[in-house]
Structures are given as structure tokens and as C-alpha cells.
Image 1 (cartoon, rainbow, N blue to C red):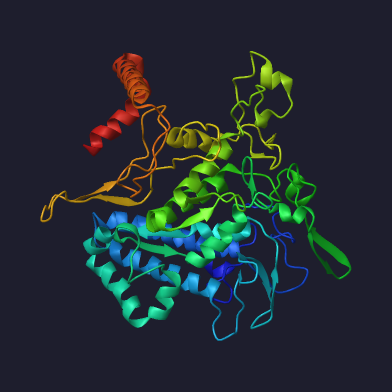
Image 2: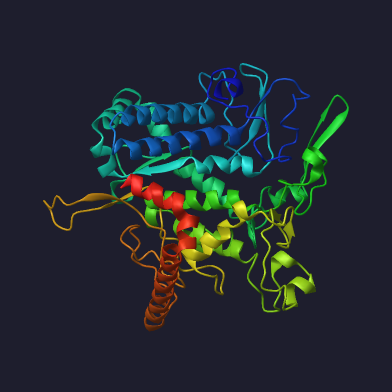
Length: 474
């Protein structure tokens, strides 16, 4: 796939159809009517994200077999080269996908050499590069000398390249962390300014797939007498592309929103309270990126929670689903959602990614008014280390940070894991302890009953394969 979609070998990818259906001005599955190749910001962002994910997996495996250090180093190099190619043209021969004037990433049509044209459509295409972000703990780097030497080689020999694509190698982030990211701090702030603008990407129910700017400013291009146009369509598609049964020109999709939330949390693990952005843009309210991540999660949850009138946005004005006792508490997992109203669209059984809302509720608690929260998601997805309590204590161990927390609890950044000591949870301490106790009793009862079922003859038959696998592993 890499060889086919990077035909010039320049680490800029022409991924074609990437599941975003009609997001572009042209059908991405067909040859361009203009000729040339479509250099895709999202395809290249995905490949950088892939490289960092494989790097993270390789380092995890290196804890058990050191041979994976070399693989980690290889994916580190892949990431660096992709980041360099996407962002910084070489000797003026290739155009960058970054538009400095707009502060955003765009696709571009390339006819080879310096001849290219950016397609200034503000969509998820320009947000997906945010996915390519990873923090590395200092303990992790020190644990793998071969990988550390490779990092050091880049510092010593390709410092210009490394400093452009790694947020800081000399002055580290919070708790001495290292950040690998496609976007530096300045570009991150510029992208978030648009993403958190309610007249562009930020809706009451999450992040739109296409900026609302294009509602009054559609982008069009005429090729050989045929007009190609992209405009903001918040609901069902008005295009026949891919059957017209999905739409990426405005609606909200849970999966891509979840990845944006995780990316913001990773950025926060590096920048901490030192980086605060206006959210929403123009509101005068500033918050760190952990709080921004929770704000987006709570807006997504407002797709499903009941309003003061008893209606759920996902059900729109359907009185049967909103009020009938046989329907009102059974919520459908729609494929995507109207960016202006929150109405559920597409397949109604898309549990695979719309079910991610359950994790958001688990991690942050149900939203409370006002919608802008004072607490943020406290979990993280990479290595967090248990550091020694005292100098010289050699009991420091790598641990995987947990996303679990007591049912009913809201998240906070009080934990030393994320370094924020200022936010406080909404809950009253006594009430929180009571709910924690109730939740623990409920979980204990559930586990006990589950083991009872397994002990029965029917249970052994049902779970036999799983039990045999567990015995083999032990």
C-alpha cells in the first residue's frame, strides 16, 4: 500500500478512498479530472499516526524482547521523514500541505516538481494531522539504550530536522516528557483556533467534519466545463458519491471525534497548564487542552442526554422515541449525526464506533450545566511511570495508566499522573464516597454471580475454550 500510494517516494501519500467518502471536491477513488496526483493531508497524517502507533507497540514489546528496539527506531525514522515531507518542502521543489496564511492543512493537486495547487477546503482533512502525536516518558527512553542512541543521533546529526518535528529534544515538556508530533506548538494553536470556533468546526454536539464556513462560502472548481463543488451540508448527503448514503461534508462522526479527544489529551500530557487556548474561540474563556478534550466529550454526550423538554437530540422531534414509555429509554447508535441539530443519521445500529460514547460517559461522567466543564479526562494511553517516592529508591516500575474509575465519578486532573493540581471535581466528598461504595458493592455482586454461572455445568460448557486458554497461559 505504501509503495502504491507514495508513487514518488517522497513520503506524501495519495491514499485515495480513506473512508471519508465525499469529503473532497473530487471522487477520491477515481483519477483526477485535472490530471496529476492528489497529495492528501489526511492520508499522510494517517501514515504518521500509524508510524507512531507502531513505534509505541514496538517499545511495549521491547520490554520483553530487545530485538523490537530496532523496529521502534525504524518507525521513528518513518515518522520523522513523513513529518518533514508533509510540512517542509525541500529546496522549493515541492509545495507544503500547510497553508501559513489560513493556519490549516489542505490537500493539494501535484503535477510533479514545483507545480501544485492547494485545495482550500477546511475539513477533517486538515484536523487528522493532529492524530499523529505521542509522548515518551524519560524512563522509557533510558530503559532502551539502542533506541536512545538513535534519538541522540538525530539530535547530533539532523538537529534541524529533529527540532522541526519533535516539539523539544533539549527543553522537555511536563515531567521531562518528549513529544513526537506532526504539528509544533504554533501550528497546534492555529488549528485549534479554527477547530474550536462555533462558526466553523465546533458545534453543540461535537466537531463537524466540514467547517460551517463553507455554508456561505462553498469551494468550487471548473474542469473541462464541469463544476466540482464542496459546501456545508449538516445532514443527509446531497451528493451521489458512494451511493449518497453517508456524508462527510458537515455531520459529526463519533470515531474521528474520539481520536481528536485522545490527541488533545496527549498534547496536554506534554504541555500541561502552560498551553491554554480559547474555548470556544471568541468566548474569552481559556482552558488547557485536557479541559478542551472534556468539553468536546460533553458536547458529544449532549447528542444522547435528555434536555429540559425531555427530548434527546438524537431523536430530533420524534415524539414516539422521546416520550413513549416503550421507546424513550432505548437509544439507537446512529452512524453519524446532523451537525446542527444532533439528529441521528445513517445506519441506526452502528454500535462499533458510536458505542464509544459509553467510554466517554465512563471516563468523564454525564455532562452538567454549564456545559464548559471544570474537570477533564485524566486517563492517558501510553506509558506512565510510578516514580520513586524518595531519591535513591530503585522500586520505580513501568505501569500502564488505567482508564477505569468508580461508576458515577467525574474526572479530575487532581491526580499527579497529569500534573494538574488545580481542578476539583463537582461532587460532594461524602456523596462521592457513598456512590463509590455502592458501585463497589454492585461490581462485587456482578463478579460473584458471573463466577457462579461459570461454576455450573452450563457455564463450563459455555466458557470452556476460554478457561482452557487461560490454563495454557498459566
